[in-house]
Image 1 (cartoon, rainbow, N blue to C red):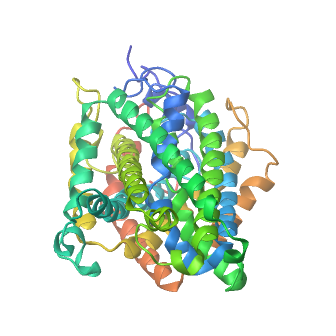
Image 2: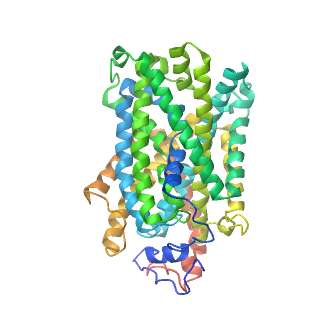
Length: 490
């Protein structure tokens, strides 16, 4: 059966914006059928594992020490604050993901509510969230690869080959390797990728639970005092850093065209993932600080392995944690790269970027060329970037897209109140409004230099849209069966 209906629904018209109606998005993607040449193979369990796979990785295994440096023992509050931000936005993602189950995630949601310009800039920001975060995660993977090698064979890669120039090295070869490994698995097919992600997600949850069991044997109340040495400012700064640990839960909505019963499974998977991950993070943070103290954990690479080594007075436990981190972070690279390719496929489908990104292999039913292009593009910053440089920029870009998603819920409720929704945001409209507020609050905590970088990044995106994407949009070039520009666009 064709994924596109012969007579798609009429487009929406809106003064001053090109808006693609939810009905048209569903028709183009295949709605609840096979989506745009993609195969629906993921059930609820696999989708939850995919979400955990996209979230749990560098943020907790590597970034915990940075959060502790900002907030001290109050990092637990920082994790909760970041989680609250995610929960409000998770409600919005759940409603939109159940109503518009397509691959484009927040890009498509913005297209259906706020117009093409905003949608393109959201997609541009997603290059930070899904793309640049791959580089950040790959850099963190390299740190634990060295920790694992040191624990197992007493040898590690030299700094010149395991770190970028900003961290005292020349090139980060392990970071390149993990990106290419993920790309190889992704082009083989979504069924294989989902199985691998599920296995890795179960393993890393087990590793974190084991870490907590070991760390709490050495827990001392005195290590939590002073609880908040930097006050609320430190907690806020810690939350902005800790938020990186939650990046990836929205990747669940990028699987909208490859999930069985997406209207039911997407909302459930998002909420399960946020709850599970928050409990894990708070327990890990309490265990790490309570066992050794904040000073011993702060600004330490491979902090979890360090904690286990000191608690057990052996390198064996730390080696096991390092192995778990290697697997965990690799699964994040796999899941996040998957999300990136599906976002680009949706943008290409709309004509806003070159068509090569939307082509699906008839053999593997995956966007092969898209995947390899993404792998090459993001292996480069992974090889030469410092983790600290990309984390804050990724965080602010992600928070900006999440704020847009909360606004999109309100806009869609007003424009399409009759649209079928399998999940509705509770406490509407207070919930999405609070979601926007928390996002802006954490964006403020990233610092003014990150804001300058982000504004420049948005300006470049606006220029790309004006010079390339606007005139090539299929809303203009193929008006039959597609949305047409609003009155002021002509």
